[in-house]
Image (tube, rainbow, N blue to C red; front, side, top):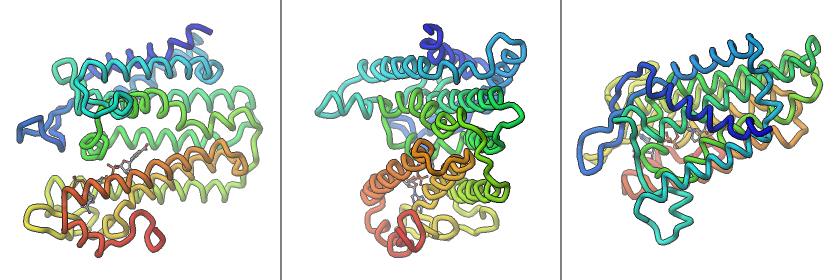
Length: 357
Ligand code: NDP
């Protein structure tokens, strides 16, 4: 169906417009403007764009204009459309800027420009990309789950409902703490190219639902309630580690003397830089990555088919992404912190998994 091919691009344009016109709050970010000590400014309204979109989706479904499982039925055509749009977008944000590496393909993949802001700064392109990906992911998850409930009715799997609820929680949590994301690697260390552009427009919304994609057409696996409880527990342990670490660092960077959850920050310093060494940042150097992996594991296990490979691709992808990202971040921090980083490594010897890795 041709319309389905264009649906991702049409939706992305709609999210872009909502991002620009709905009320937002201006905040100062973590990084500074080029050749200046002034912090970058961002206008954030992700959670409002999210709820507005989901409300419109429900109303369209309720009125019969847009079947609740439309996005599931035409998912392949949409994926092809998103794929094409993602490539066009990546070219559009790379080609106009001067080369910064000795290879066009590296430039295309990693990007050339650090930060882009449109519409008089109302829209930050990196934050828009994450927002667009998150909302499309949510609509896909809702539509895929709706398909399961339409097909199976009374015999539908509660695990599909739970998995969708956890994915929704994951998206809402990200948008609630959108400002904290300004302090993360993608924002301060990455350029805008295929990796970020195509990644947010295609990979994020279509791959992160892979556990639902691979199981909503299957019957209820009758997973016992206590096992579903364990999976939800795994998810929330992961969430505590990830959100806890990110917030502890965020508050520390804003004001190093503010306690977080009663934890008084303990830091090492070389006189110029400070590194947290207690709380979440004392467990391992990237406990937040372990948290992310546990959350994804909880989400996929709820769908109830642990012997299928499809759902496992989601946490496995995180293992690949975050274990290599830890190494990249480590190299970056050695350059930035020098000897202080070695002291930190002695104090907090584990990279990601306490006592194991
Ligand atoms: P971190 O939030 O761990 O940020 C790493 C940076 O934090 C370092 O470069 C350094 O930057 C600073 N830092 C490191 N150690 C310390 C310390 N002890 N004290 C103070 N500052 C320190 O990693 P990311 O930005 O990669 O990830 C952010 C979040 O996003 C994580 O929770 C991660 O799991 C999540 N994520 C989610 C993904 C998803 O698809 N859902 C994908 C990737 C990440 P500085 O220069 O500021 O000192």
